[in-house]
Image 1 (cartoon, rainbow, N blue to C red):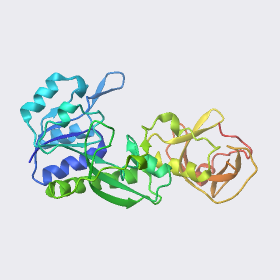
Image 2 (cartoon, one colour):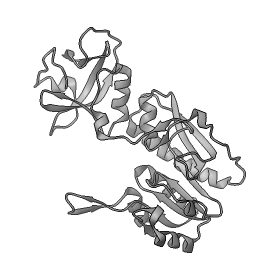
Image 3 (cartoon, rainbow, N blue to C red):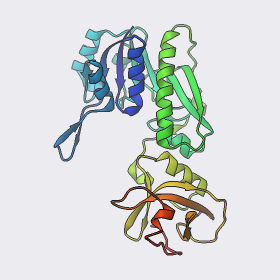
Length: 307
């Protein structure tokens, strides 16, 4: 089967590799334009472009697929049997969606219709879902609203955003290939829009913890935002990043954000009448470190309120 593959970040790399291993003809890879880093001094390729070049696959990088007549013409010339998409980063126009004979399939990192949108992996952790997974779905003009073909689930447990991302990326690759092997046999299942939820893109400012929230939600946010964008508060004028935490189940009358204890177990911070115990931190210009190691050479005054 002649396939055009569209994807950009690390999440999309395993699916590209799996298609090639399975013997599909990946005629072209489409990815986001190169990013400029270090004030224009260095060009950074997307992970999918790097993998495509390694595999010897031609790469296209339209700036805006919805307004690029040349890109549409290139796609028409390629005439793919199917377009496979994973975290590409642009909404495809009707002309592209209707081009391949077997349609456009998307590898989405949630159990649709829950968590349509850009950040389903992190949102599943933050919201405390017991499980999440991968959905292979037909693409249409709506945002992740197309008919579903296959699903695979996994427990969320206490996984970090990175751990769950990596697991789902591999699951998505396997499920995509398996779906293509049975294309035409699998029933198309419509999504129930009444059950849909939205997973908006993550912003850096969301990493600034709000200690008026429940400790369990704060702990989940710390895991969800590991490694990016990370979570933080301010100890005086210094940003303190939080990398690991737990919820000891202790109640307190202290004001939200107040340090009520700091020792071997970690830093106990008041949050919504409870305690968030931070066990791994990072200070500016330093590496991640366990709190008990940090406190061997530093002190945190009880009663300090994290900004």
